[in-house]
Image (cartoon, rainbow, N blue to C red; front, side, top):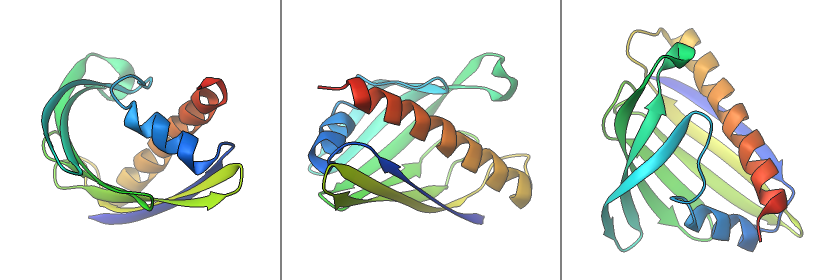
Amino acid sequence: MVRVTDDGIFDAPIDKVWKYVDDGMMHNHTSFKMTNVLEQKGNMLTVQAEVNNPGGKGTHKETWKFVFNRPKGFDFEYLSGPMKGSRHTHSYTAMGNRTKVEVVGDFRAEGMDDAATKKAVLAYFQEVFAEDSAALKKYK
């Protein structure tokens, strides 16, 4: 496992960020899309996602678990797939019309050493953050 931390600031108030998060099945990303809700109990949500394979050749399915801790953030765990056992926490801090997000987690990836895993996770977070930032600007 390798510890990864990252942060960024969304140009949107925290209530808009949470509304966007709540529409999780409706907003997708270049690297994945959530396809099915498998279980929903209280603040816990388990979903199936279709994830692009490295190198862009095909896709595979993964199972993810979210535990929402409003308004603070959420915990995320990979239940299946090449990152099974990896976990991270997204923490939100309201800053008026902006929202700071901090991500901290422990990651493993099949077939990758710690340095390569960290590099891949940070690139993934950068991509998803950029897509979410752009989407939040258009989101009502």
